[in-house]
Length: 118
DNA sequence: CCACTGACGAGTG
DNA sequence: GCACTCGCCAGTG
Image (cartoon, rainbow, N blue to C red; front, side, top):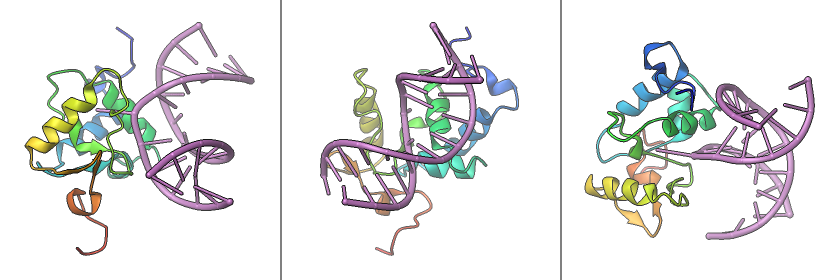
Protein backbone atom coordinates (compact mmCIF):
# COMPACT_ATOMS: atom_id res chain seq x y z
CA UNK A 1 0.00 0.00 0.00
CA UNK A 2 2.76 2.31 -0.46
CA UNK A 3 1.34 3.31 -3.76
CA UNK A 4 1.40 6.90 -2.83
CA UNK A 5 3.08 8.00 0.33
CA UNK A 6 0.72 9.75 2.58
CA UNK A 7 -2.57 8.19 1.70
CA UNK A 8 -2.75 7.23 5.31
CA UNK A 9 -0.69 10.18 6.35
CA UNK A 10 -3.83 11.54 7.90
CA UNK A 11 -2.47 10.10 11.08
CA UNK A 12 0.90 11.72 10.75
CA UNK A 13 1.94 15.32 10.63
CA UNK A 14 2.38 15.38 6.89
CA UNK A 15 1.69 18.40 4.78
CA UNK A 16 -1.12 16.41 3.28
CA UNK A 17 -3.31 16.86 6.29
CA UNK A 18 -2.75 20.60 6.19
CA UNK A 19 -3.77 20.66 2.56
CA UNK A 20 -6.89 18.63 3.25
CA UNK A 21 -7.74 20.88 6.17
CA UNK A 22 -7.65 23.93 3.92
CA UNK A 23 -9.70 22.27 1.19
CA UNK A 24 -12.31 21.34 3.77
CA UNK A 25 -12.70 25.04 4.59
CA UNK A 26 -13.70 25.96 1.05
CA UNK A 27 -17.32 27.15 1.17
CA UNK A 28 -19.91 25.40 -0.94
CA UNK A 29 -20.45 27.00 -4.33
CA UNK A 30 -16.99 28.49 -4.26
CA UNK A 31 -13.71 27.40 -5.87
CA UNK A 32 -10.03 27.86 -5.12
CA UNK A 33 -6.78 27.35 -6.95
CA UNK A 34 -4.02 24.91 -6.06
CA UNK A 35 -1.72 27.81 -5.40
CA UNK A 36 -4.10 29.37 -2.91
CA UNK A 37 -4.55 26.10 -1.06
CA UNK A 38 -0.81 25.64 -0.93
CA UNK A 39 -0.31 29.11 0.50
CA UNK A 40 -3.06 28.74 3.10
CA UNK A 41 -1.63 25.36 4.03
CA UNK A 42 1.71 26.96 4.73
CA UNK A 43 3.33 25.67 1.54
CA UNK A 44 3.72 28.77 -0.64
CA UNK A 45 4.77 27.97 -4.17
CA UNK A 46 4.10 24.29 -3.78
CA UNK A 47 0.90 24.13 -5.77
CA UNK A 48 2.15 20.94 -7.30
CA UNK A 49 2.28 19.32 -3.93
CA UNK A 50 -1.38 20.16 -3.46
CA UNK A 51 -2.31 18.39 -6.65
CA UNK A 52 -0.20 15.48 -5.56
CA UNK A 53 -1.98 15.33 -2.24
CA UNK A 54 -5.40 15.51 -3.81
CA UNK A 55 -4.51 12.72 -6.22
CA UNK A 56 -3.99 10.55 -3.18
CA UNK A 57 -7.62 10.98 -2.19
CA UNK A 58 -10.08 8.28 -3.05
CA UNK A 59 -13.75 8.00 -3.69
CA UNK A 60 -15.83 8.71 -0.61
CA UNK A 61 -13.38 11.16 0.87
CA UNK A 62 -14.69 13.92 3.07
CA UNK A 63 -12.50 16.40 1.25
CA UNK A 64 -14.32 18.55 -1.32
CA UNK A 65 -11.49 18.24 -3.83
CA UNK A 66 -13.78 19.29 -6.67
CA UNK A 67 -13.62 22.88 -5.40
CA UNK A 68 -9.94 23.04 -6.23
CA UNK A 69 -9.14 24.13 -9.77
CA UNK A 70 -6.07 25.61 -11.44
CA UNK A 71 -5.19 29.29 -11.70
CA UNK A 72 -6.60 29.41 -15.21
CA UNK A 73 -10.05 28.79 -13.85
CA UNK A 74 -10.09 25.43 -15.57
CA UNK A 75 -10.27 21.90 -14.24
CA UNK A 76 -6.91 20.21 -14.27
CA UNK A 77 -8.79 16.98 -14.61
CA UNK A 78 -10.58 18.04 -17.75
CA UNK A 79 -7.79 16.35 -19.63
CA UNK A 80 -7.89 13.23 -17.51
CA UNK A 81 -9.14 10.27 -19.50
CA UNK A 82 -10.65 8.84 -16.36
CA UNK A 83 -13.57 11.17 -16.77
CA UNK A 84 -12.99 12.58 -13.30
CA UNK A 85 -13.20 16.01 -14.87
CA UNK A 86 -16.85 15.45 -15.68
CA UNK A 87 -17.53 14.47 -12.09
CA UNK A 88 -15.81 17.56 -10.82
CA UNK A 89 -17.72 19.83 -13.18
CA UNK A 90 -20.99 18.17 -12.31
CA UNK A 91 -20.44 18.60 -8.60
CA UNK A 92 -19.49 22.24 -9.02
CA UNK A 93 -22.46 23.07 -11.21
CA UNK A 94 -24.69 21.39 -8.66
CA UNK A 95 -23.36 23.86 -6.09
CA UNK A 96 -24.31 26.74 -8.31
CA UNK A 97 -21.00 27.31 -10.07
CA UNK A 98 -21.56 28.39 -13.67
CA UNK A 99 -19.04 27.43 -16.33
CA UNK A 100 -18.09 29.72 -19.17
CA UNK A 101 -17.28 27.14 -21.77
CA UNK A 102 -14.68 24.99 -20.01
CA UNK A 103 -13.73 27.68 -17.59
CA UNK A 104 -14.95 29.04 -14.27
CA UNK A 105 -14.74 32.72 -13.42
CA UNK A 106 -12.35 32.88 -10.50
CA UNK A 107 -13.19 36.55 -10.14
CA UNK A 108 -16.73 35.56 -9.34
CA UNK A 109 -16.47 32.17 -7.66
CA UNK A 110 -12.91 32.29 -6.39
CA UNK A 111 -12.69 31.83 -2.65
CA UNK A 112 -11.15 34.84 -0.96
CA UNK A 113 -11.77 36.91 -4.02
CA UNK A 114 -8.74 38.91 -4.76
CA UNK A 115 -9.81 39.96 -8.21
CA UNK A 116 -11.14 43.43 -9.03
CA UNK A 117 -14.44 44.37 -7.55
CA UNK A 118 -17.14 43.17 -9.81
C1' DC B 1 23.06 10.43 -7.48
C1' DC B 2 20.62 11.29 -12.02
C1' DA B 3 16.47 11.56 -15.11
C1' DC B 4 11.60 11.72 -15.75
C1' DT B 5 6.90 12.64 -14.43
C1' DG B 6 2.97 14.89 -12.22
C1' DA B 7 -4.82 17.12 -10.27
C1' DC B 8 0.55 23.64 -10.77
C1' DG B 9 1.97 28.78 -11.29
C1' DA B 10 3.93 32.77 -13.33
C1' DG B 11 6.37 34.93 -17.02
C1' DT B 12 7.40 35.70 -22.04
C1' DG B 13 6.60 35.96 -27.13
C1' DG C 1 -5.71 32.20 -26.60
C1' DC C 2 -1.57 29.15 -27.35
C1' DA C 3 3.25 27.30 -26.89
C1' DC C 4 7.44 27.28 -24.36
C1' DT C 5 10.54 27.85 -20.18
C1' DC C 6 11.75 27.83 -15.42
C1' DG C 7 10.82 27.01 -10.60
C1' DC C 8 8.92 23.82 -6.70
C1' DC C 9 8.63 19.33 -4.27
C1' DA C 10 7.92 14.17 -3.96
C1' DG C 11 7.91 9.54 -5.85
C1' DT C 12 9.86 5.99 -8.87
C1' DG C 13 13.31 3.42 -11.78
